Length: 371
Ligand code: FNR
Image (cartoon, rainbow, N blue to C red):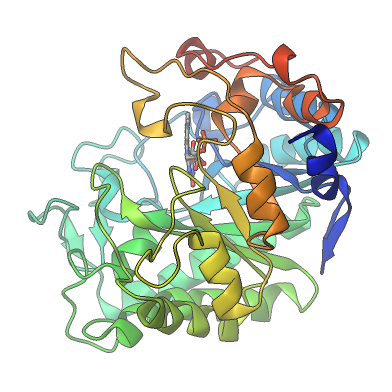
């Protein structure tokens, strides 16, 4: 396969407020380089370099929504408060100046905030049922009035994003964080209308999407990231079959999602092999919903991302043939690249010009430094 195989990935793509010059996105990656929740010049420069390197869509690291219980870390950026929003405005302007598009990932960690948060330690961790991902009690469960307030926090976060010039938003509904905790039966034991059947477990995330849609208007793109796997629970699944996946995705689409971003660790793995020998989760998502999808997971790398923090975290570069083939089969519209873009801001330009052997391999240092 030659670089011509990738030509389609360098064609423009447009849906609502997202107007991309090619199909490459930067995957959302927490970096914790924003003390006090404020992204500064180094963060703006970090994203600007990826935009200048050819990445058309920047999805920022997770940004904490205004709930004081959204996250534990004092160095993760906020998407609220004047200083943080001023900081984001500089990031947005820097990325736009390079001709790229940028959306923040809106993040609430739910139970994964843990029981010893550094940010707002006086506030108790809250989640659908006060149950951690390993099934043990942690923090407390949301009351129904908490949930009304929680929806407002999501709406305020999206409105803030729009106000500083972001081109859309991504909701972090994956990896066992708050919205995913509603979907997953291990963490959602509620006996109100948000718990029980798969339809009921999908209701809260769908209500968040609908409320955001009502706030931001029809044209402002809402991307929704979801996953089967959860942090440290890589075999977890919220949908055992395509039919179950349809039950989850349809209400989200009806509520106003524009683009779906199924997070997998290896993009080429068939999701329901008993139904289709090759189709990945992005392909199934596109087939079921008809919406544009983003694929992700070990693009161009020989190790999956869970290893990235360990002593063997380094990952060599690989051929992109599986990605090109998947695109030619029509399984996705946009591809998100994670660690490869941490290692090499010029990665997309190198792929476009066929300089694959000039790509920089990923090492753990690329996580500990912001360059
Ligand atoms: C991540 N990932 C991630 N995902 C997410 O939805 N929100 C986040 O804030 C983060 N944070 C994060 C930090 C770091 C350092 C890494 C490496 C990863 C997961 C990421 O978006 C992506 O799905 C995986 O890295 C898989 O893509 P690659 O790295 O295999 O291309």
